Length: 304
Image (cartoon, rainbow, N blue to C red; front, top):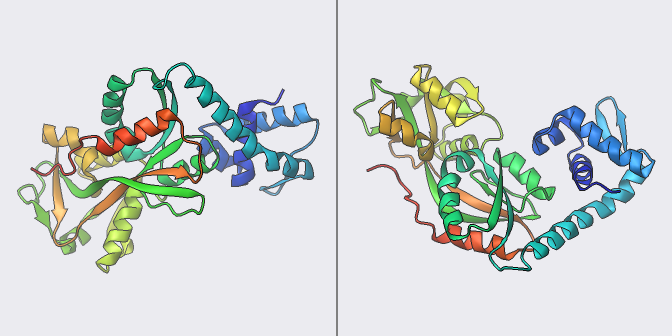
């Protein structure tokens, strides 16, 4: 029997051509990816991939399966969703991919309100950076994504749903504690902590500063960390300052452990966007959530 998850793994590996990338996107270990491929190969009694010195390529049998894999997965999803919606219009299943800031800090508030209104819609959420959410979308692993970084791909439709503001954060008792704005020249001289490559937050900082004629290499970068939580902890410990989304600092701002500042003369804003595959079949549950997202009452700026 053709296993749906094995087929998803095969399709993702065919596109990524890397066991490590496929494992990251599917949230698996590399041995687990290999196991799913072996399941398919055993069932079909043929080898699907050639592996040589780290390179992964499709065999002739793999090329045939790849031609059908996307249609099979999309038809399966469409049939599944139509069945879920057969008995009641607001019953269904959503698989949402969210980039880190949105998934950890903003989406829980939105989902809580949405579930109050539509309790019979089941929601499954996966968190990753913008680059990986885009890959999950292209590999039909999620229904749509909510991302904070720019996405440019011919098969992906991008639609803004709100604006975010990035802020400079410093620990309590810092020299800038009593300021509301800080000059970029002062920021250059301080050790700064940034998100990792592939992060939407990092890309937004890089693009915005570039407009002002400033490169990331002009800054005194001391650390690159993979989450806003680790960045906030490092700033609280006095290891440097950082630039992150206002939404990530709600708790610390309330407790007084971190202070938010704006950059003088520089608007560090970026768009939060919905991404979907072009011509993607849209279920009633998907349409209801996307409509809800547009009218959701979210405060755009936390500076008061």
